[in-house]
Amino acid sequence: MTTSLILNVIGPDRPGLVNAIADRATAAGANWLESRLANLAGQFAGIIHLQVPDNQADALTQAMHGLETQGLQISVTRAQSAAADPAARMLQLDLVGQDHPGIVKEISHVLFTRGISIDELATECVEGSMSGGTLFRATARLHVPTSVSTESLREILESLADDLMVDVELDSPAGA
Image 1 (cartoon, rainbow, N blue to C red):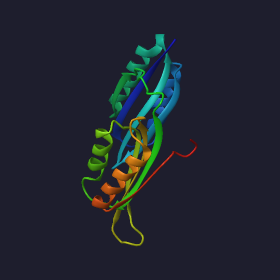
Image 2: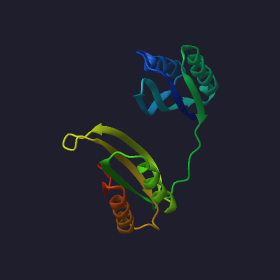
Image 3: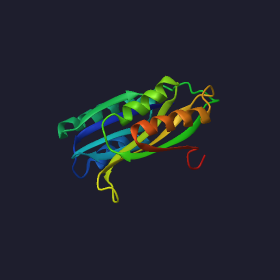
Image 4: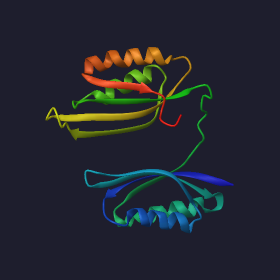
């Protein structure tokens, strides 16, 4: 039997952090299933999903906490399987527009009030080549319940996009 562990890691970025985490995971016989790692404002930040033999989960947790002496903050959570709605579908939301406060709040509120879960969200601010201003870009994978039609979701997002002065696209995710 195996245990899924989710690691949340943050600390000053420097070479060797991923290697230190991977060394401890491998030593415990863990399989690195997925991760999202980034340098955000000079900080190494990441979330990692490991699968480890049950009898090694506590030892691996302790080994990961040992990295805290190197300036990392690490939390380890035993993952619980979430009951997924088998009839729900995945959609991808792409958004781009002039950056300003409140974009994520407004979009996430629309999704929340319709029972839509955000499975993954990636955002960035980039310099606009044509406009000279800062552009905000977001890509989200959405888990949409059957009670919400794609067309009604598209309509409400397009209406909100007009208010926020952003462009949105809603499609099936690539590879789906």
